Length: 415
Image 1 (spheres, one colour):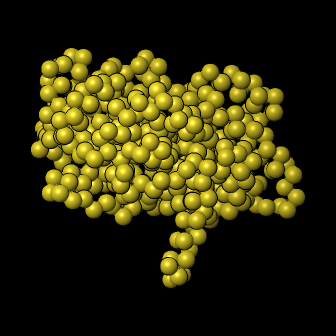
Image 2: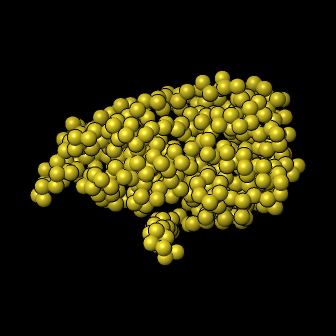
C-alpha cells in the first residue's frame, strides 16, 4: 500500500511524523515537496536538509513521478501544497484522500458569507462531503471553520504538528532545571505583532515591581527570575529599547534566531513557557516543544494548538481573549506555587510523550487507513484522530473550563 504526503516543503515540524510513517511503510511512503523552502525560513535557522531524506521527492525536479504518486497512491495525505489542481483531480476520481488543514477563516469567520469565497470552498471541499475524503484538523478552531460551510460532516478529526520527541526520566527532566529557587521563563518565536513578544517586556517590568514590593515575604517570589527571548524579527530593537527604558535588561536574555535543537536545549532549562500568539497562529509547534521539555505552559487560548494540548490546570494554564492581565496572573500563580509548576511541567511532558507525538500519530493513522479500507473506522478516544468537536472561537475558553469541571466530577465518580 502506497501512502503519499504532499505539502509545500518538508521541515523540522514534519520530519518526525514522516520518519515515523517511513518506519511503518518503508519504501511505500513518500513525501512530495511542491516548492523550495523560502529564504526567510532558512535565515531563521530552519534547514533544507530534509530534501535529502530517502522518501522525499520534489515536484519541480521529478514532475512525472510526483504526479503519479499524488494521483495514484492508495492514500494521499494532502496538506497545503499550492497544487490544488492535482488534489482535485484525485478526489474527482473517488480515491481515498485525507486532507490536513489549518484554519481557513483565521482572520474572521465573517468571511464565510462571501459568495466568491463560498464558490471557491465548494469546489475544493463542499462537493466532496460524501466522497472518501476526510479532514485532519491542525488546530482546535479548524472544525468550526469547516462546519460553517457544511464540509466533512462527521469526518473531522484532531490533528496537529508533531515535533521531535525527546525522552527523559522524571529525574533527568527535573535535573535540567534550576532548583535553587530561581525561575527561568522562555518565549520562542518571531518578534512580530501576532506573536506579542512585547508582553514579555511588560511582564519583566511587572514581575520586578512585584518582587520589590513583596510585602508578604513570599519566598517563591524572592528568587532570580530570568526571561529567555529566543528568536528575532521586526520588533527586536523596539523590545530592547523598552527593556532599557523599564530597567529590566538584567532579567532578559536575547538569543536571536537559533536552530531547532538549540531552542530545545534552552527550553529544557526553563520552568515556564509563555505562548502569546493570537488567533492568527494556526497551530504553534513551540507549544509541543516546550511541553516535551517539561515546561509548565501559559498560553493564549486563541492559538490552534492550545485547546488540543492543554488541560486547564493539569498540564498548563490557558488564558482567554489574548489578555495580558490574564497571562500575567497565570505566570504569577506558577511563580507563587512551585509545586504546581513542577506538577504541570511533568504532566505537560507526559501529554507529548503519551499521545501528541509522531509515532503515536503515525500508528493511529495506519489504523485509520486500514479500517477505512475495510469499510469502517473507530476514532481514537483521545489525542490525534479522536473526533474534533465543533466549538466556536468565542466559546472555546468556556469549553475548556467545562471540560476541567467534568474531569473533576469523573475523578470523584460523579460522571
